[in-house]
Length: 208
Image: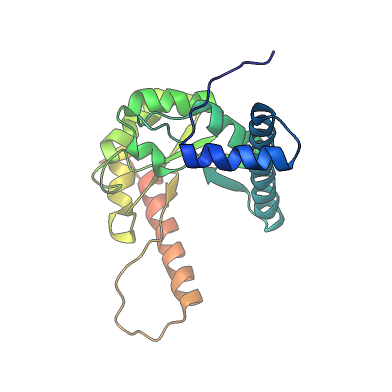
């Protein structure tokens, strides 16, 4: 089925389209239709290239997502992005935190086919939004995993886990250092070891 729609163009744009259509030996409407089709193919191609490059680089997954102008999740476009990224794991990124109704947005993210949602709970940082993150995970149940992220640091990691109840986390784990002479690689390894220790402590110790 072909759906016909009226299109409004600025006068200058319409003149350029008319000239291009004439040069290509096409009608005005046929040229617009052809241009739209080319644009869609380019967009689909770029999505495919992005997914291929991510997978070729060894990525296990990608974080993508789209919103409509009114702040709601663009389910259709997001689903297309997710489908282009498969078979990698797909996460809806923190554009989610810009939506005006987190509970409704969560259902739309699930409807889009996401495996995971990265969020600070709509707050300025993950610690401030920890309780909301917990509510979102409770709402999602086993339909989707909620990943807490946005301002996550070693100093607040344990508190975020305690308040939210989630153990899927994302962050740079940044902390201030005072010229201790460590290389970036050794700093990262040290921080990861400490993060794992904190997670194990929160997950294995009895609730306080």
